[in-house]
Image (cartoon, rainbow, N blue to C red; front, side, top):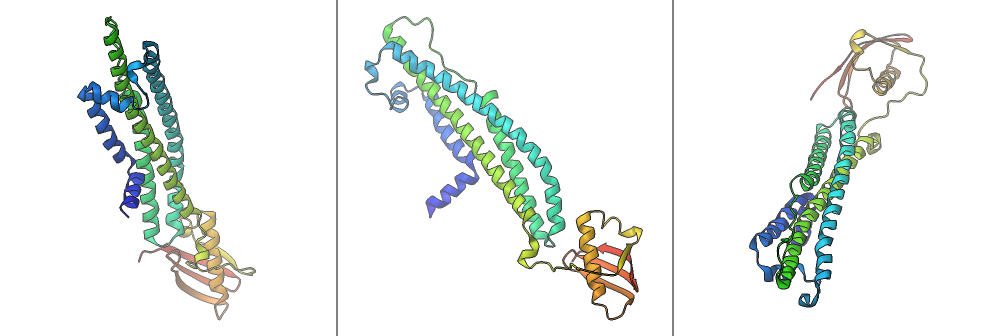
Length: 284
């Protein structure tokens, strides 16, 4: 149970795990403990004392190549964040449609909250990637004036340890950036699922479609703001014709409410003509 909870925390808050790991790595760098550093950061090398100077130089130079790769990955993540910004900007309309589609305020609140979380993850992804390029620009190089062979070996080993530790810090920031991008994408997909989910299927609203009707519907100017969108207009017109079809007489005034869209509608029927005077949203 504790392991599952810990894994969930790490997935939702990847920057927390990164912070703990980087504190340990920074403490290693600040310790300047040659023996401990060698044991920890050269644990993949057997008999380090027997490695010649050329191989030590190769290990030393390899860390600079790794640094360049991490910076390239950071730049790629920054480019991905700019794409996410475009997706985020296009999602505002989706949030608005969700608010109109579902009569339940809680659904709109949940969608808006998930959307906000996606924006936060996107910001953190960009921050972690940009931090690698702008802040973690430390490299440890051996001193040029050192002549003694033993001191040269120590310089290679010590600076390679430092550079490996710094590269691990870079790797943790990159991993956090990737994790935040992934979480932002998951949040956006959830919002899209809420937006495209066929609400009528779950029985939350009635089907007011009328296959044939001889009536013609006219709207007053005050109704234009409500029926400006085509989908809303079709829904309201089907609702009105459905209501007219249930009338006992073919003339008369009628007022009713639609709980699904929370609308108050007032109209008058004169044989085949339906004059709609008022369509007004209401809140419970």
